[in-house]
Image (cartoon, rainbow, N blue to C red; front, side):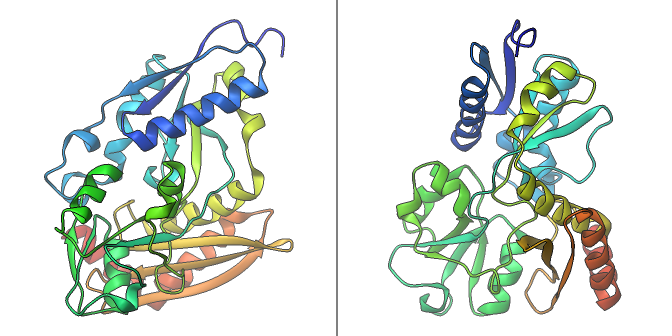
Length: 312
């Protein structure tokens, strides 16, 4: 790619171990794809990382992990930002675009316990740690007796809480554990019929300025289209519902032949009500599928539930 590799490509990333792994993974792929390309990381401390003593919902949601990275793009202190796409709000700032997504890793949630067994094997009243209302709602729907407790911090911090006996179990994303070499810590992978994943869980995305043609040319070759189609359906579903990354909303799309099958869910945080449905549609317009399923979920009563949560 003559003419495109003169300058160093700068990657904005959070400073957490998982974020740094993801950014370095993208850097490696770019160096391998474009011989001679210089790539460097620009680690940034985000508000979401700095505030650990309150729930994400209380301080503004997962967008707090993203804002400073996007400002670095806008101020041209970085050329791309690498994200866990499940953290990215539905609306991107003007002038920014998701140029590529990598092939999705295991999208399921992982149960980690001090002993063996699955969700059904936890003792009555077991303390389960999670920072997600989506996970909390579905766990309580399956096991109303559980004592679900708020758990913030990076993966190492959460594992230490489990190992210290503060929790009987914790729930994390399979993808993050696998990427950090911690797959052996997974006690059980939660069936999506029990715990439907977060929108875009397991997807790494690459964001850049949409007017930066050089960077777009370098990055778009990494795009995995099947993952992009699934992600676009899930994100359109959440966007139509008006949910933030912290809303008790879940969605997972998968390819079946030339069609996309999308499962979606909205839940009461206490697990007392799950509104769930499935729809299929063309891979040619995944966003339309997401909007269709969202409208069906809204018609089933999700609107007042979400409005009440937003107001609260």
